[in-house]
Image (cartoon, rainbow, N blue to C red; front, side, top):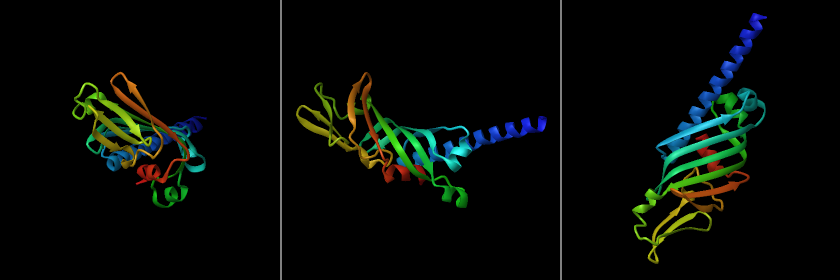
Length: 188
């Protein structure tokens, strides 16, 4: 009986360790491919090894802080990916984690007001979205900033909704299926 308990404890510990390592690998990929100052990944799956090998991972949350986007620095970009499927061939043949598909993802971008102050020092500055993904700042009737958010590999081309929040702006969109550009950010 004690042997069975030890085997179960070892299997659970191994599952947690592999998931922790996978989170580190994905976070390093996001940081290096986006130029963010920091990145973290949380994989919500247990048993992780089973979901990794035979199923889809129910939820993967990616958070990148300090993401450069042209002349602007985005405070945070988070991706809540649902039903993430890993490429089993790559996993078995080369010990690499490669994302094969993501059924649906919600992308949230936070921009602190301080990041826009250097561009919009006028009292009546307006922040808007053009074509759902181009952030435009107008001051006194003149465009002072235009940033195509989708030039960053972590941000897919989807129709973002812009909302003023107490300390800046929030942009949110949900996309399904998730485009290859976002998959490659998590895989390369």
